[in-house]
Image (tube, rainbow, N blue to C red; front, top):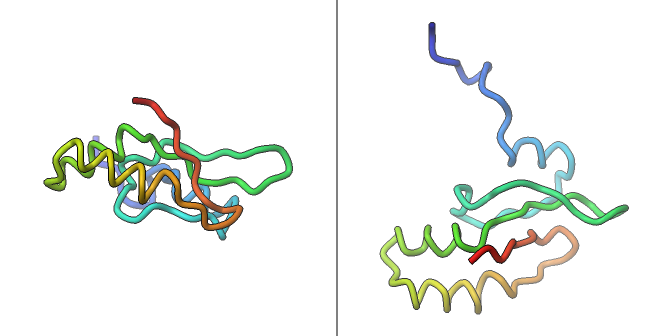
Length: 92
């Protein structure tokens, strides 16, 4: 059996959301923490990220865990950039 080509691969969460909401915002360099998309009734669909995965990505980039959590708390989880701001699931 042959490996799937790019054309055969299922769409990514990012690709699906881009069709649903072309104005959806994404967190830079955190695609591995992107777990889905959703939103409230009558509001645009937005990206949904896992908080624990974001912290783990920061740690894998060489940041110690306490600094990663602090960076997440002060620079990522509290960011509001309008109605297309991603949702972060606090799954610690």
